[in-house]
Length: 150
Image 1 (cartoon, rainbow, N blue to C red):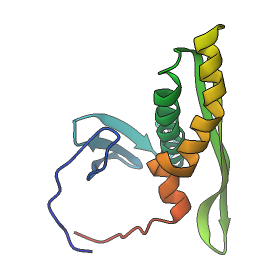
Image 2: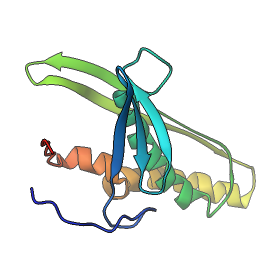
Image 3: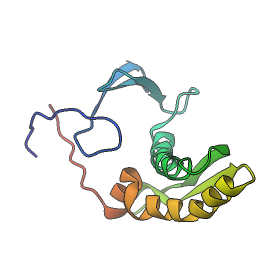
Image 4: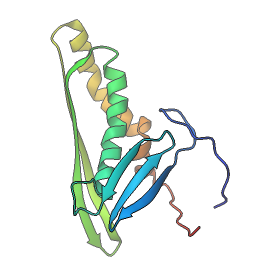
């Protein structure tokens, strides 16, 4: 895989995305994005998120953004909670996640705007799953991953 200079982009549009990760201690790392935001991750020995938890967060977060943008145009939610979970497995394929479930709990106020948002919610979730969420779409399509030494 050739290395090409890329202009970093953010937001929801197309373009190159990247992170940089530095070791901060045994099994702990600080991740920095192109905009300067940071998070700490770890192996599960502390309260830092593990890579698998971040994987679930990425799937849930990507779809949450999609669903929120679609439904909140109609009405501001009074509750918006997303959970994601699945079983981490080890078998003949190595370590991997089994089937993942993402569950949305979204509530809107009573009235015409809330009714329209409630009506739109199932389709928004479906659109995120079927075409909008870059993270889950990449997993479902089986995006190739290349690892190398620099």
